[in-house]
Length: 383
Image (cartoon, helix red, strand yellow):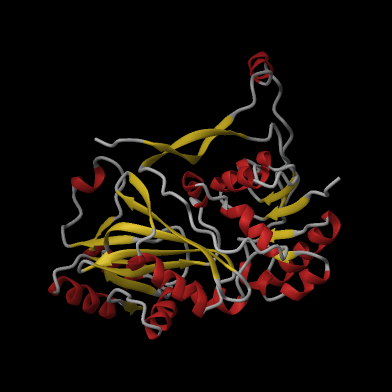
């Protein structure tokens, strides 16, 4: 009987339930056992895994590495797909290998490079990959100079932290004063310049922002799988234009992504994002981890998670080129089950439980709750 491949996903995002589904549905019929850990007891990845455990909170990166090594040793992990503390974990790759665990992550130096967007832009530009105009801003004077330059060129200024991921801290600057327009409808990323400058004058915290023109759609996320030899096995672009999604193999997007993956040794699964500026593709971001939407490549007949696990285990899948590109689609939410109960970690003794009322007791007999998270691709014609 073939032994199962044991895969661990640490504190990852909810959409990786689809990553887990694809591992189990691998075309070789190889049994896969998935271990998941998270600090959030309501993360759906915990319910989707074969085994799960709460993660200790407030560990330093070094302490977390020791925790991870212990997990791999005790649970016999074959492939570890880290998100939290990825750089610190990658720096100890050989220690994991000594336990028989392959780390599905790029080298620590590459992870650190792309963790700072300003440094990444400067470095990538040197190898010939187009980047948008950008300014590194730390105070009000630098911000105003950058905004003036962008607007003088006909652009709309936006900013985001040089570190961070997932669009956290992204804002678009407007000259319109704060008014009721900002308080109606859904929350908006637009923020009046006067509020930003006022906040900068009042704060005692330092800022490190990347200011640049707002880039145009389409947004193209190129999912790459690269081997330890630096050769790219897979590079397929997922396009996003408003609600409409699709796929592309256009060299204008694919070749710069391949160049970045090869040049910086981005081993494993990475995601390289582009938009356009003045009508030309430019780099937007480099994610040194699998993208949340990676599973959407199944619409092109590809199982990228399984190919990555095979490669990590030394079973080279070879060049992976889709035989077809899936039709355009939209992303819609769907329910995923949660664990019926999961112990929270506490720093102090919990208060005594309230008296159980008949209503509470009756409610406790209901069905386990589900949380609408994640996304599933569905072909759709958009209005």
